[in-house]
Image (cartoon, rainbow, N blue to C red; front, top):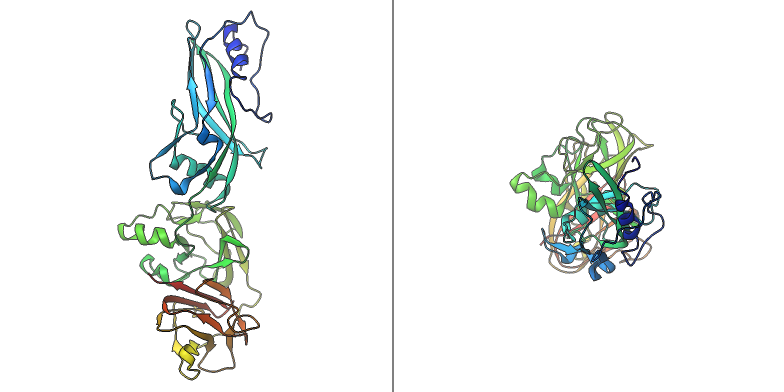
Length: 389
C-alpha cells in the first residue's frame, strides 16, 4: 500500500494496536510511517468477550445462533475518516505459516455457529476436539480513496465442533451396485486409533465408484433428496491415488486409480484426505455363504448374511438377538474358514465397541440382546454390529 498522506490515520493505526488486552506477535503489524503529532481519538475500545476467552462448544449452540466474540466501541473519528470492512480473521495456532481465513462477524461482534463450524472444518475436519485459533480483528481506516489497514484486537479462539450423533459412514455408487436408499447396507470400518478415519475394501469399477454419507445425515437428508452433506473428492473425475475431500458435491465421486481392481479406500475426515491402496492379492478367496454361528449356544445352526456388493465380499444382515450370546462368523457353513476376535472369549464385546477386524480361528465375540445391523468383509475380516433404534 502506498504511503498515505493523512497522517492522522497512522496515528489511529498505531494507537489501536494497544486497544486490545491480548495480542500475538506472529500477526503482521501494519506499517507505521513518520507522522505528524497524533490526533487524539477518544472513546475507542476493542475487547474480546468472556465467551471468546472460553471454549466455544458448538454442540450446545442451536442452528443459526451466534456467540459474541468482541466488543467494539468507536468514538469520534477525525473529520472525513471512517472505519470500513471490520472483519475477524483466524488461523490455527499450531499452523503458524498457514494463511488466515476470514470469519464473517457483525459489527456488534456476533459470529454464527455455522461460521465457526466452517472455520474448524476447513482446517481440521469434523472430529469433536477443541481447536485453538489465533484470531485478529481488522479494519480499514479510510478517507476518500486512501486506506490504512489497522489491527483492532488479537486474541485466541477455542472452538469444539459438535460430536456427530452416530460414528457410522456409508458408501454408495457403482462399487456397491447400490442406490442411495440402500446405503445403510454398506458401512465403512473405523481405523484403529483414529475415530475420524474409515476404510472400505472391495473391487472398484473406476467409474463413479463411491460417495460417502454419515448415517445422521443420510437419515435426515436423503428422504428430501438433499445431497449437500455427502463427501466426495475435490477434483471431479480424478483417479489420483490420494487427494482432498470436500462435502456437498454429489457429482464428485471417488474414482479408483485403476478399473476393476481390489483396493482398500481410506477417508480421513479430520485431515480431509483420502487414499487408495491396491491390494497385493487381486484374487481373494470367495465364498458361497457367510454366516453367524453359535447364537444362543447353537453351534450347528447357521444364520446367513446376504452378500451386498457386486463382487460378493461384503455381507449384511439385520438380526434381533433375544438374549445375550456369543458367536463367530464362518464361511460356507463349515469350520475350514471361521473368524473371531482376540485370544479369549468375549475379548470383543460388540455391544460396547461396534467395529473390529476379526481374524481366522480367533475367539468368540460377545453381544447383548437387541437388534443390530451386522456387516462382514471376508477379505479383511472387518465386522460391525450397529444397533438399530
